[in-house]
Image (cartoon, rainbow, N blue to C red; front, side, top):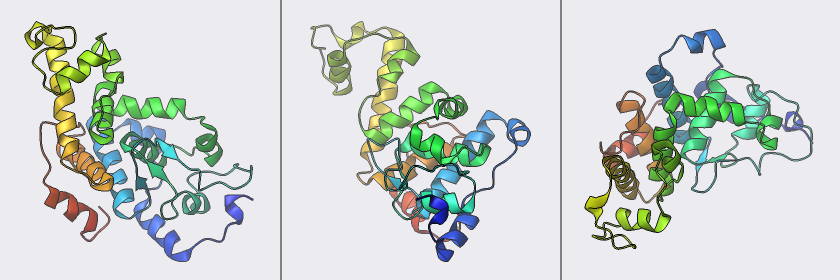
Length: 247
């Protein structure tokens, strides 16, 4: 059974036409600055979240398990039928990075549902990471998942035992090897402070939907960059999720 054979919910179709953007050409998108791209993608993701077209969940990049039945995926993700299949309430489950990824592909290309289901997404994931940069992408993951992202080690070029990482994040005076915190290099101190700020940011929002919304609001407010040291009020999150209007 193909998504195209599934009856289109008229109410859902109208919502999708209002909320989900039409793709921009490569030339149009290329003219935007990195900051403009990131803000646009975050705004789109927040709109999807607010209108319950995606569901936020830790431990899921993009989960389309409930979307596909059968093996015929030859359909454009930008067609209305495909969007209705993908965005039926609660069907598309995403983490923070996944939400930005889905928003990026909806803005920039006509990736097929088959590409998504079969995992043929590497180049598009790289496109999204390029917009937000790897360090910021990893901080976004840390804040949403509420645990340390080891991708940050690669970005910051650190190679330290995970037990020592956990010790520093927990604020212990000595790491498990008995070395004082002050023995860290300047790069390592900055590295851990970023992690602690990201974890502290995420800890303020127990609800996954609200936590993702807070991260997206932070990105929008800070010119396309997630800055975990800058807080977002819970009241602003609730207003963004439950107020009127697309965004």
